[in-house]
Length: 417
Image (cartoon, rainbow, N blue to C red; front, side, top):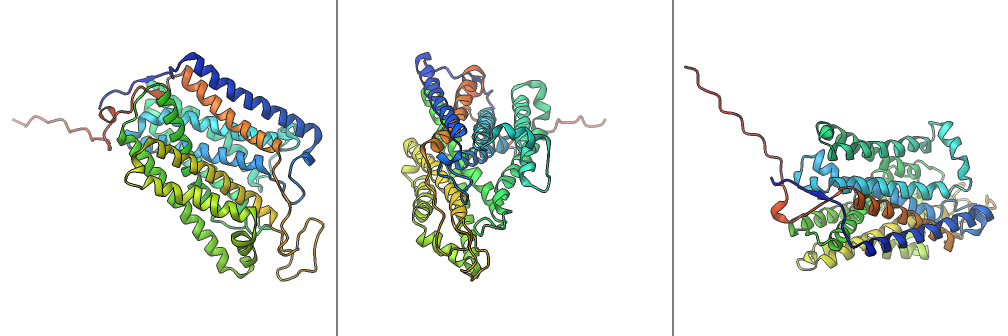
């Protein structure tokens, strides 16, 4: 196996500073949007007493679960013993930390009273899954940083595999916990489903890998570093597998709801009569985020074209945002059935009103705040690959390690006299 050489991202300084300038401008605009919402109050957003988690939460959850999925490449290389993925481990870890920081930043600034975060960090209610997630998020970041040290420093190499296994278990727990935030809310019919935990794990694999492939292709193309067809084929086939798993969980989730009579009204509303939510489900979630990428990635010709592969990754990301919009917002917009079959008992928040969804439309400050979190994650990644050696010099086929780790041949022992 040839030695993998890592180098900093060496694009032209003018282009590099232009990229940083654009990302910094997006972050600045997002900061202004946060200041506006903080000063005026959340009434300037589209959120209300029924929809309390809006578009910023869609971006935040997307970034958080994508950070877990972005680390999947490093886990496959170290924890599962696939050396061909090991040259990508450093970028995988960096992107995982960057996306998590971007997602948490959006989450904190969308709380309404972010200065009270210190209360959540010092007073824990362990019957709430939100308290668990504080430890899951901070622990994940610390473990990934330690994981990066084992990959970059020879002294840490003996700890690489144990830390990689710990990171694998931890990120599975993190993503399951994020999905369980919604799955444990029994008051909302669309949330009350244990399958949301493993579904979020599958989503993290697909969305994180799509982001990783786009970042990898962009950084290598701008620096004239080659990516061989062998590596690209493996990554796109892996993405197609994860997208298929997401569609499988989607099918199981809705078939289960359709089987339960009390959820028939919810499924009819979401699948047929939900307006923008129905459109986002079929066009965004199923078509753009699932069927079209699968058709491209498995196509004998389009699946070999790098531009089409990049397009499929972009579709998975757009479809992922549409998916989380439906999962998070549509589930809140559907009115709570206070007593199944009764339309007499109602509340002022549209609870108990059959077929009447709560109004919600995202405002510009909400969208800008979410885009600011994306820009934070990309900015951290751009600075990291520029100042530290996260990117391999080449991913050409002749420089890649073998598919499997080769066992060391036993040393011949001298025969006894």
